[in-house]
Image (spheres, rainbow, N blue to C red):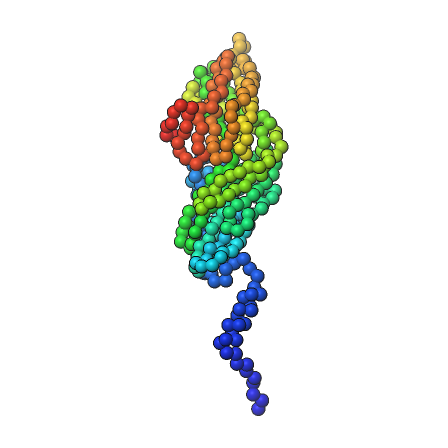
Length: 334
């Protein structure tokens, strides 16, 4: 009978062969990993209202994905890029997860990511070099419906559950309005705002998000073309005597830029004629604010309209990452 052949390899040969295999393996992932999928808890720093813009609530909408990069910091020795441009999707609770990645067995991860309701509104992305330190994005021309770009980062993350806070990279322009006479449909008295347009506003551009630990800063480079943009989803609003937000929209999101002129379109209701028909007069008013609109800041313009006059004032400057409103000479809680 012919004996089967066996090859005996000693322990030293095994180690040599393993080293060769490792040297031939090309991957960004560290070789030793835990069987725990990569996940983060994603929150934002400002509680607002709206649908696609701005982000709703104190956490990212579950419909949004997070595009992430990570850098691996081993316990000893030099680190390496772990991955770039990977998509984290909502997996339940407050967690977003990257199904194709796992936490390293030892060491930590530095992370940087961004989220946008419609990924098609970004025309190019360039991740920075080592340490997941930066990402540069060009926002495509999307004047009809701006998205709220948010970015967040964290350093020294392990498989322990940690929250990554996302901050706004753009400015929010919003309005409240009132009149000296509350709208009265039966008598046809009062004022109705029908439209607000921001004139020659830049609505695209290139932004670099730079991470330092868990803090992310935003640097905007070239801004794209300018256009006249209406507030999205704005409904005709009949004014009361107390300042109130306009119906249908939380405001307009734009890249940081010098403040642009805005035109308010409104109808003054002047009662009825002898035959019972409405006496209405369509009006418009153009106002140019002073200063600039900065990233991560909410600007509230207060409109006051009477039968003969209109005024527009910057009433509040709200840090889009806090609940404290700063007026021109006062600071108070919302």
